[in-house]
Amino acid sequence: MDQNREQLSLGQRWSHARPTKTLVFWSWVATAVVTMIIGFSWGGWVTGGTARTTAETMSNDAVVKRLAPICVVQSGRDPAKAVKLVALKEESSWQRGEYIGKQGWATMPGEQEPDGKVAEACATLLLPIS
Image (tube, rainbow, N blue to C red):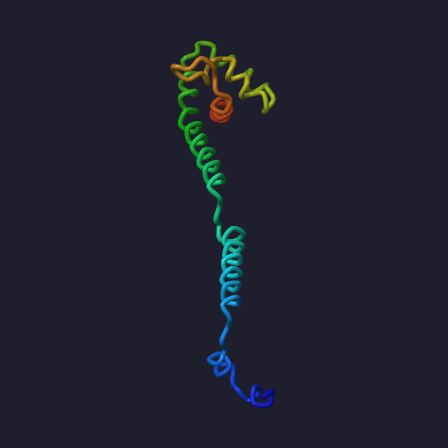
């Protein structure tokens, strides 16, 4: 029998193979697991929570990007803008957003308090102007 098996080609052995139901089941399970591993590690798949977090971050960034020019316009309405821009340059980079917020430029119409991210983006836009 072993001698006869060695003489059969791979295709012939494949066509004579009769896997059990257990072997087929575990093959499917292994295939599903390998597919998930490849999909999540290299395929770019993400869970619902990760997708939700990414979407929220992107939407918040888009809103800040659209509100920062409003902050620049509000700074242009300030009569002491030139003096305040000089003071803005003198602030350290991590305190510039807070400085913009204290001036009230980053307080959007209808809001009570300034938004920190808008203030930081506004400072980035105002520095080349000053």
